[in-house]
Image 1: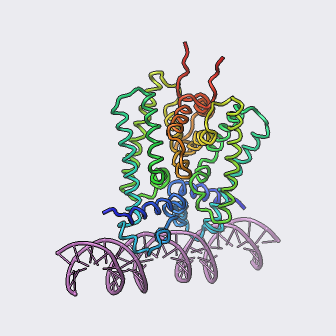
Image 2 (image 1 turned 180 degrees about the vertical axis):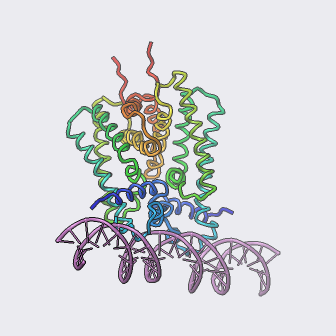
Image 3 (image 1 turned 90 degrees about the vertical axis):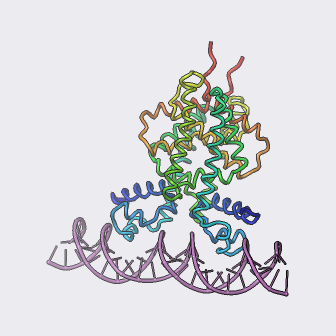
Length: 193
Length: 193
DNA sequence: TTTTTAGATCAACCAATGTTGATTTCACTT
DNA sequence: AAGTGAAATCAACATTGGTTGATCTAAAAA
């Protein structure tokens, strides 16, 4: 079902949605980018909205899968966060345009998909909040409002797609380590004698 | 020129744009929220786009002003970042809906405002990058890619409007300190004997 | 060769959306 | 009481945007 034309369409459409937003990127924009007629696009997708919906849930599932694997491994809090960073860097490198969708375009889902998406996102964030909360309770992490801490961890990861969709990342491992170092130890140079 | 009706309109319109995006929130949505006719709104604003444009640049200027004051004070890097956090917490508390605009809706500006806005945003980010870069060079901050560090600092602040537009913040000082502690020292509890 | 089938093309439709102009309402000034 | 000006109402317009159906092309299957 998915052939090469379809793949080219996806790539161009996602890029346009990143630049202009879902509503801002029109079917005619897609057609222009592909050099074909508008009606032609309906050979690839049933509708604009269903395209968005499918891409969103597909990407959402990738994050869920990754997170569930991390949790299933039953690591310590520090290693779990380490793996979480790896997950975000990997997905943001592999699917920058879809990760961008996840940040900005979910509001344009229709019911009932919208509520379903938000439910899943809440479940996802609760899982992370559980990890963070456990770390704070056990004393591995600093004493801080768990909600704020969760927001901060996620915020430290969610900017990645901007970075990866603009320029090629030279060294993935270095990037991971820098983010990890920031999340764990912050920006200040450790005081040493 | 700005009377009470105008203020109510702004509030409702900004809230709707936060929820549905600029293109998703229609003039008729605004009218419904106000309980008036669509045409009525043109008593308050010249056009939908000019409303967006004005709000965006007004908010952008508030950030510029705040940042310029910080820089003019010629503090050390650590204090500059401290003040930057204060600035973001304050503006995100005072103008959550406009800060949200700044994150998501600038793409819908027309030329030449779009290019002007992006220029200003670049100038702004370069200023911050300069602070961070100076801190890294001087050894006050950890050795890390300055671009990544800048992204991380900004990311640690840009989520705030989500938090402040959803629920009232109990203690502003605590919030500031938690974010600061995260940016400077990270999540890990400092090892101590 | 004939048949089939995916893909391209063209024209058009219909709902939604930003905007305008004409007219009316109504509070406030003189 | 008359007049002024802002604000509300109503109807309508022009454009845009997603989508469809009919038709044509051409390559693959039979």
